[in-house]
Image (tube, rainbow over all chains, first blue to last red):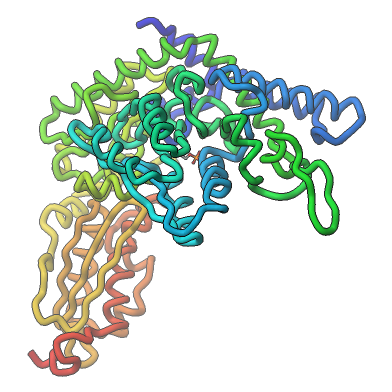
Length: 403
Length: 138
Ligand SMILES: Cc1ncc(COP(=O)(O)O)c(C=O)c1O
């Protein structure tokens, strides 16, 4: 394999931990990733040397903090080929998606439509439901067709209803399906709809270029890509920043405030009210430097190889139900015979293997699969074939005990 | 803290009640019934009761649930049949864990306690269908 995984693992102190006397095998990366020393150190350095509030002080520390914060923004923008001003910092992907729903729906007219898909995370369903109830909007869902992929026909049918926006996930966190985001955005544009991409599972694992994709909005979380928790990103196309309303009100998002009304600051600050998570932005920027050094292409290939091996091993157990397309991202959802996902995860934990069991914040989709819960193993750059073998071993044990 | 290995949780008695749950299967003409789910993990369970005065005369359940939850339901219903409803309502976490003989740990505690929750809910709202009081005489 092209990655020097052993060297990479040295950078992640948590991977030396033991659980049940066994070395940890962390296979829950779709939930959150571990953090390399470079990220932890960058954040500590910020707090130790130049912590101050940004955009307001006229003193040296505030200047340095502002500079570090804006450099982080520029670095993150470069990573997805956006302009720095198009990067809005949020708490996480969820807040980014809520921001989109809020600014798009607040002025919507009753009866207008929102198009989603059947493979969305709750964070790309619930905000729309809230606004649909508030404004009397209609929700539609493009269907999953053959082979766990979106049905192109269902997408086109959904778009033929002239929705206000089409919001969809780039990579499904349950199925590992990689949607053709560029095609979906193009079709949305042709139908006169905004396009919003939930990239929480894609930006951490593959090269994403917002210009090539042609999206209007794109959301992701820092914590799933080696960065800290509490920092997320919304890319918003420049033109839309000018014409859509602000999200939260408060300090920093205004240029002038009177008792009657206020004037909004220039974007992106129009969308960033209050003191931001400066250390988080700096940590995420360090994470991006780390990912760049390793190489996104190499990471994607490594994960896909692990996912392929994982499917092969699980199939060999027999009675495995594996959900997702052949050409999948680096994650595998499955159940083994009659073993409940929770029990399977407990057996994995017994071997030090950390996997997720549940509905993965996608209850409608997991129900469609006919399961109450599934197990999910999700990989990242520091995972090894040996860890996949240990998962397979634990699943055999579970099958023997409970199957 | 880390002693959560599978062998310790999935002991003989738990596996036995999971694979051959007692008092399993739907009950017709129940005097009380209730269902519950643990949305985090997808455990679902339904409980039916036959009541005679103050006493639980029969109890049944069906579940699509993990081993801990299923075993807990099986042991619990086995325990409460013949008991006074008051006694069942007085049961709590301690009693359930004593039946199971293990502490499943914080992540699985909900699975273990779901059956008791559903049982209590059933006892608190006897079935309105099937003619109320009359159903008890069937
Ligand atoms: C596809 C997808 N969208 C959105 C989210 C939400 O991310 P966060 O919880 O960081 O806001 C997740 C995370 O689980 C996800 O997998």
